[in-house]
Amino acid sequence: MDTYSFLRHFADSWMLLLMTLLFIGIVIFAFRPGSRRVHDDAAQSIFRNDKRPAPAEAEAARRNFKEA
Image 1 (tube, rainbow, N blue to C red):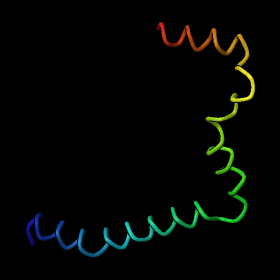
Image 2 (image 1 turned 90 degrees about the horizontal axis):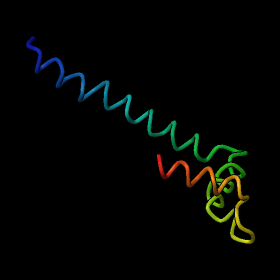
Image 3 (image 1 turned 90 degrees about the vertical axis):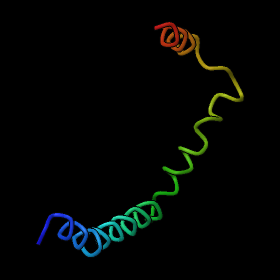
Image 4 (image 1 turned 180 degrees about the vertical axis):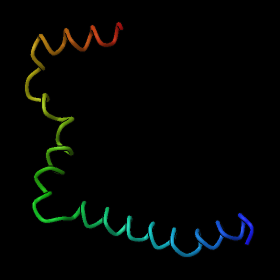
């Protein structure tokens, strides 16, 4: 069996199975019980400093980071 036929057979069978299981695992991980708090925190993180500005040391660190 030549290399192309072997890799084609592998991709059509085992790699397809592996990718399907990986996808199902990622979906289950995202929707697992107890993950709502983590996802809500990530979703709301961009609005954290809307009511008041960020502390001065955070702003200075951000300016230094942009300059570098």
